[in-house]
Amino acid sequence: MQHKWWRLIFPVVYGLLIYTSIRLVNDVITGTRFWLRPWALNATEIAVVTVSSYVYLWGIHKLLEKNQRGFNAPMRYRSLIKEFAIVALYVELVSTIFITPMAALTDDGITWYDAVDIYLIPLLYLLLYYALIRGNASMRKSYEQQLQIEKISNQQLQTELRFLKAQYHPHFLFNALNTVYFQMDEDVSRAKQTIEELSELLRYQLYDQQQQVSIRQELQYLQSYIRLQKSRMNDHLDLRVAFDNALNGQQVYPLLLLPLVENAFKYTGGAYWISISARLEDGQLQFCVSNAKPDIIPERKDRSGIGLENLRRRLALLYPNRHALNITDNGQSFTAQLNIGLC
Image 1 (cartoon, helix red, strand yellow):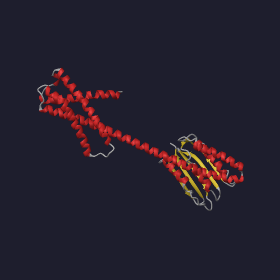
Image 2 (cartoon, rainbow, N blue to C red):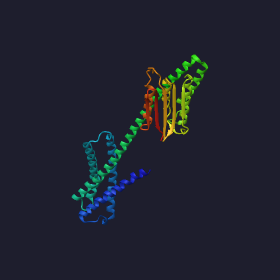
Image 3 (cartoon, helix red, strand yellow):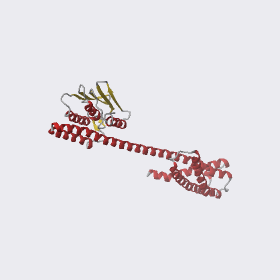
Image 4 (cartoon, one colour):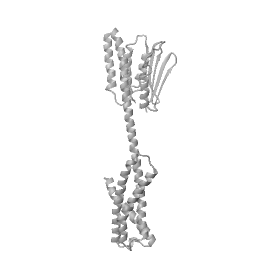
């Protein structure tokens, strides 16, 4: 509503500014004082200039709307000069139609200095006005384009994240079904229990995810997965799990820790031990997984592919400049250290 009223009042203010400037310059040249003239004559001139101001500004805004279509193209000085020249011609046309006849019919008629004032003063004011509104419109257009680019970029990132999750779920399911497959030959009842545990894990992946989850939920999910994997390992496995009690309600994106644990269970051997720890330090989640190396590492197509590459890409998208993933091989064991900034 305020914007509407301003659109109505502003031409009046601009018209008064133009009229006062013309009359003051004219008075300096002629030595007269326009406020001593008959009030009816001044009122008539003010009315004509005010109407002219509405026409000036209406046309200038229409020209701006037309020129805005070319704001996406690189700015060229020739096209910019042409644009301002068209605005100048429009202003002079309106001055010729409205103000020049008024000057010719008042006082002693139109003189050379009247003509200079009439054609020069409105032109200077209106070119300045057009430059201001054009600059504002250009910045607004640039801002809108930037928002659109960011929106498209965000949509692309969300699409890629959904793809990575869709790629990860079959990978996880493939490994879990392998566990059930081996149990079917040894203990059918245990295999059934494993399927129930697997269904709970899948429910978390498919239904219980928000954009972020609490670390407590993620660690509980991880513990369920560890129990599932431990059930298929033999009793000689030395499994050490330590989770910091300070990790509770902090928010984290889900399913970032599991690939490291999954790899540890998949490739443990030799001394046959796995160590998993999570702690909070200086506002960071510090997650570490180590496992003993087998004497001979089996060759698998997905050994360093889907799981870790998927994880690295998700971390890059979700925690840019806020994470560090280091995987080291000291000859006897593998260690994966993941740090994520939670603030």
